[in-house]
Amino acid sequence: MTRDNDPAVVAELDRLDEAVKAAPAGDTAAEIALWRQVTGLAHWFFIARGAADRPRPYAAASEQGPMICLYSSAERASEAARGLGLVDPESGTAPLLGVPMPTAIDYVAAFGEAGVVGVVLDHPRIGHHIPLANLGLLKGWIEGAAR
Image 1 (spheres, helix red, strand yellow):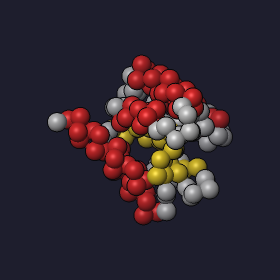
Image 2 (cartoon, rainbow, N blue to C red):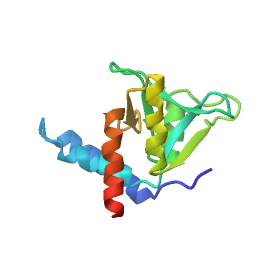
Image 3 (cartoon, rainbow, N blue to C red):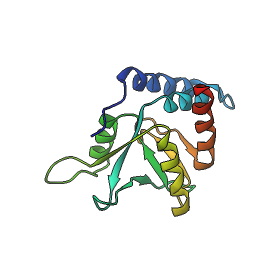
Image 4 (cartoon, rainbow, N blue to C red):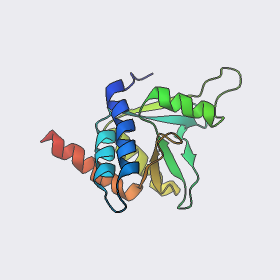
């Protein structure tokens, strides 16, 4: 299993979530800061579904269409799997995928061909989402920071 993300970076997401909720309508600064923090994670975690040799990330249904559930830590992914009833009844755990950044952005984007429309963060705990089309913006932030 991949090493989990820095707890301080993950905790900052909770603070930014509160800032997004408190922001006036139409003010996107806090949401941009939240997603910039997401790009700073070393790994994105997913609840694995399907066959062990061909796992795919868990996706939640939304009005817009299926959204891949991205988790900021293995701990949060495991917690969500338990809450969503996605654990193996025998082991009490759910298999997880840890994908390093920035590769994780391309990994998620590839599911657009299968009808996925977006990604949702730490569902159901935080729940902010973006369309797959905006993943290029996230990748641009990472590339800009690397310069």
